[in-house]
Image (cartoon, rainbow, N blue to C red; front, side, top):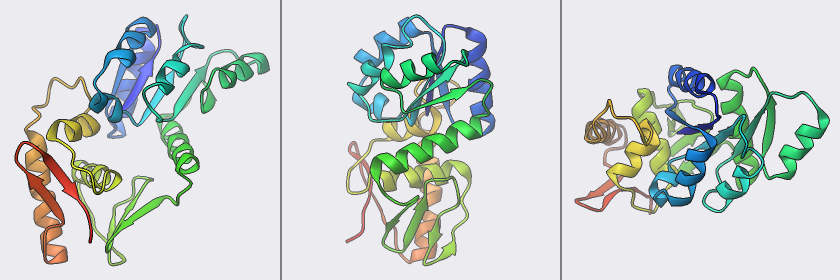
Length: 223
């Protein structure tokens, strides 16, 4: 999920729509609301955020520090002022990148992926057994062959692999795939997506690599 922070409703709603077209859940805050949320939100909600997009607002230069107290997700600033001084000030306050508006959401997502690769110092894919999951939105591979999946199932697999060896709850998966504040979708839809994903993995691998325990959640690992 992408969190957009800006004091203009038009900006927040516009980017929510644009990211939605790319299949990426997002939500918007004005700076004051966001400051309260980022300091008090549950860890599972913070962990569901893939990146923070900071726009115009009185707290623009203080929010990155507040984010860093809770999250290592990339922080990208959107600049309305094409000046070197403003750009340097944004970097100095702790953002990972600065982009000039207008900027396409695909460019933002590409920059987020690049920042994550630098932060983790790994390639743009993760292997777990014969499964290879990519960080750039491509379908995963199994034993070197493309394993095509619908978008929601692919993102669930990506999330499970990113948290491999650690059990994640249905709520955590829902927040990562649909967004924290999506009230139009029931959380139980996650069970349907995971059921379909497990069936496809079982057919391809000969067994199910996803372990589930009632009340504890899901885990993917490879021994």
